[in-house]
Length: 134
Ligand code: CMP
Image 1: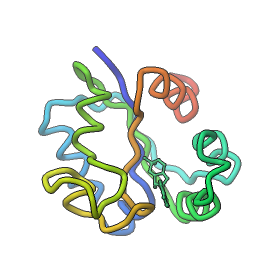
Image 2 (image 1 turned 135 degrees about the vertical axis):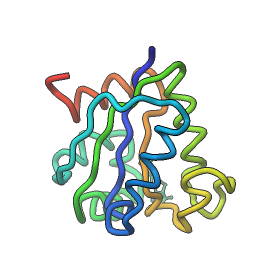
Image 3 (image 1 turned 90 degrees about the vertical axis):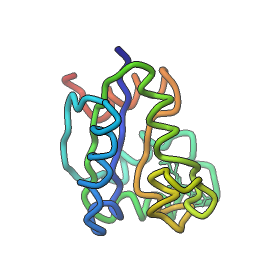
């Protein structure tokens, strides 16, 4: 069984979409292994988004991801990394296919509700960052 890391971002919480999003993952057949709510600090944002620090949009990304609580979830299932990436859709909510989480609920490149690991390496790394004891 493969594990992946999902983060429900501050807009998912402020828009009361956590239940909708987690429900989709559960109905698909993915299992919640661990889940925690907390705030991402600027330091943690720089660790998690290390690959994006030099990008022009990073300052606004950090401002957004530290603007409120997030929920981090470890999900488990066969090929869960690619299944969850398909379910969340393209980064930009305007371009994401209808039927995906971002396609159905987001109109933004930045405020796109949810983050999910994009590879086995990033899943391992991100699970270690957000669930140190796991
Ligand atoms: P995520 O999947 O968490 O990975 C990086 C995040 O940066 C992405 O979702 C968006 O929230 C944000 N992002 C990516 N590209 C852009 C962009 N061009 N402008 C603003 N924010 C972006």
